[in-house]
Length: 96
Image (cartoon, rainbow, N blue to C red; front, top):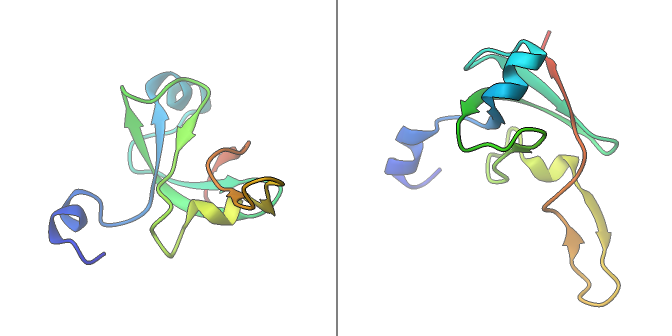
């Protein structure tokens, strides 16, 4: 990252997950997770958040070592001709 302030807040990629989901899966803060979809897989650290909505995760797209875009469908939408890079189903697991 080129912005020092942002680098201090988040040095590496993360998966924001709700406390409820983290407890159900047995995930601890900072634990490395494997996030996979039908299209790809990345690794990122767990960030347990009270802002996160149970049943969903949020992953930044701008970290080159674990960009969430690797998980997304890059097929173009018919009218606007842009890829669907905002939402997809993923599976979380503890990284080996």
